[in-house]
Image 1: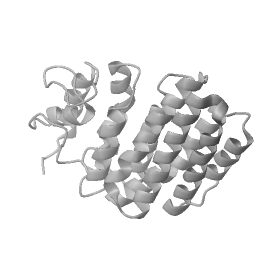
Image 2 (image 1 turned 90 degrees about the vertical axis):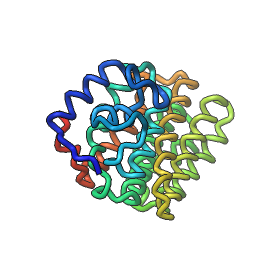
Image 3 (image 1 turned 180 degrees about the vertical axis):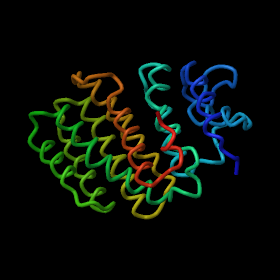
Image 4 (image 1 turned 45 degrees about the vertical axis):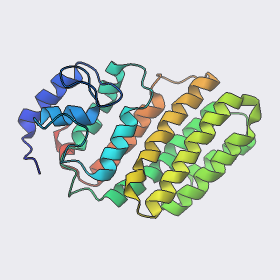
Length: 239
């Protein structure tokens, strides 16, 4: 595994992020994705698979990077802390624990906020939001709660576009929880897809949020919290 010199790495990483981040691997001399930025900062070959990042964390980060951010600059700013936190996670952060915790937090925090924002007057959706928020902390309960929320969104036909996006968000969250419970760590990416679908749902509903990237930023915050809980080495270098 590549030796990590954080005091040298962080300024190089920030210089790359100052160009903005793009969807896909990108160009070594221009904009690139968050994982390629880490490879570049570590002087590794251009690509999106730095050897110091755990499988589940990488899967989550790539999917979150490729979500519909409002701009390359917003993507870079929103992913900076999470990008640093993931460095050194391989061999330290357990993939299954990461996937499980991210799935649970996505279901219990992001999905309720989405449903209360997009469906503030729909009793079934509000009940589903309560169920997600109050779920017991385990993947099976998260999967059941998110599955119920997906059904509730599907029933909210009068806001068809938003309902479809919200149902997708809850469905991805349910899939992430089920996958985490089955120890399929790479499926942490489904939790990141839930954030992208939530952003689409909020836009379709014309929901008022503080910023365009609200739900993607929320997902990045969830990932960061989990990495801090699991003692990923890069967390000590976020300033």
